[in-house]
Image 1 (tube, rainbow, N blue to C red):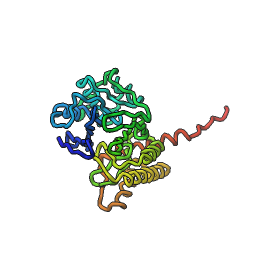
Image 2: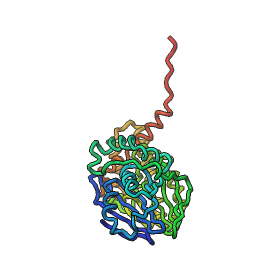
Image 3: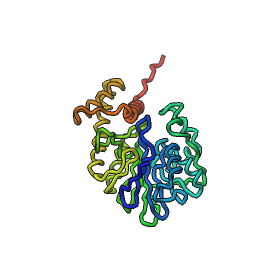
Image 4: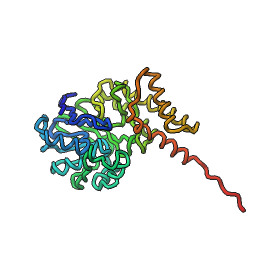
Amino acid sequence: MQITEVAQDTYLINPTPDSEYSLGEITYLLVDSPSVLIEPGSTTTASTLLSRSWELSGNLDNMEYIIPTHIHVDHGGGAGFLAQKLLNTRVVLHPQGAKHMAEPARLIHSTRLVFGEDFEATFGPILPVPGHQIHLAHDGEVIHLGKRQLTVVFTPGHASHHIAIFDSLTHGVFCGEALGIIPDNLPDFPLPAAVPPFELQLYLETIDRLAQLHPSLLFYSHCGARSDARKLIQQVKENTTVFGRIVQNALEAEESDQKIWEHLTDHIKERFPGVELPAQYQLALSGYTSYFRKKQACHTIPKHRKPS
């Protein structure tokens, strides 16, 4: 289990190697009074953390808050497992995600649709968070710790239940996927995380809102900590806008999803000759097509039949 202090009293934990889906699940431990775990990851990741907690600087048994940025299986899927083991811990959740963590049947169903019937072989089961351990977050809420304050920021776009956390001690943002994903072969070039149901306009508004916090650090959930926050935020906004334009133009030309993927990969190759977009990233862009098709459907005026 890789443990690295990436900022003052802030530890990046990489408990497992990348899965077959190339989703490295990174967890952050904030050592404080009390301590906080941000991004518990899947149950597979969470169980590794718990079994090897003796390696951590903080004691998980005394953990007061667990904060997933959103409830997708690779970010919050293990919250229920940890809550059922750490009985004094509260799980901080967006109100729109809390109901699906308390009763995860719908979340399990959607996870199967994305990752297959046997998703538990990789991610482990999604267990419910006991209702009395759920802390419903509100936008702008401040969680006071001994050395720092954590401000909850609602950040929709990637998911309606997405939150980010601004840390006063490090001036960093735990951004989940609200500021994109950085592929291994495109260092410091964040691409939008657009899994359905993706909302492009909300995603762009979220990027602007996080930029207004003027963070010094970005703590990504799949690609670690980065210090050039301003440049990365500008880049993900540019990429989000350009990708949207490419997809929209292709759909208006009635091109196939495969052709759209080719346009996007060609765009990357123009910037970085010889670099291929990872195949797994095709899923992360599929939200664009559903977003624009939904907008087209909303603006389609049904034709009225002529009276017979």
